[in-house]
Image (cartoon, rainbow, N blue to C red; front, side):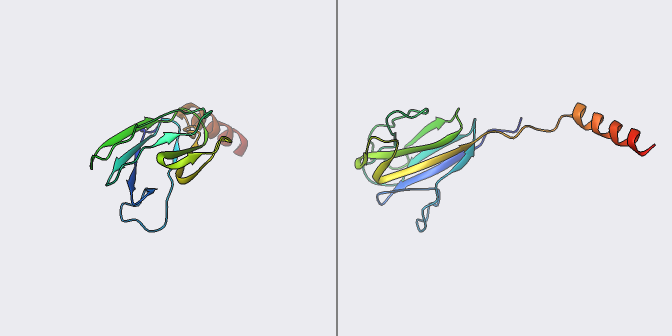
Length: 128
């Protein structure tokens, strides 16, 4: 199994963004076992999952620049979240206003040496 990764989402200017310079909004696409780290770059914000989600988290509101909040994802799916001060959970698994999403994919199964060996044996046997 590969190493789990940490993806930093910057929180500033009423937005959540993987890009610390701003610009086009980029939401993280990660694998099960990876962590999203929300980092406060300015302002009073929270990172809070919508109600009823398979993944649940709430950073609480903070304004301390440089603060971080981590959540490690254990389920596959798209998970919506919002800032409790500047967004709204609209009750159907989505949020409006200051909101974002995290897409979590299954971890690809690594090829094992045993499967590779069996494949090579089958290929060798087939060539005879």
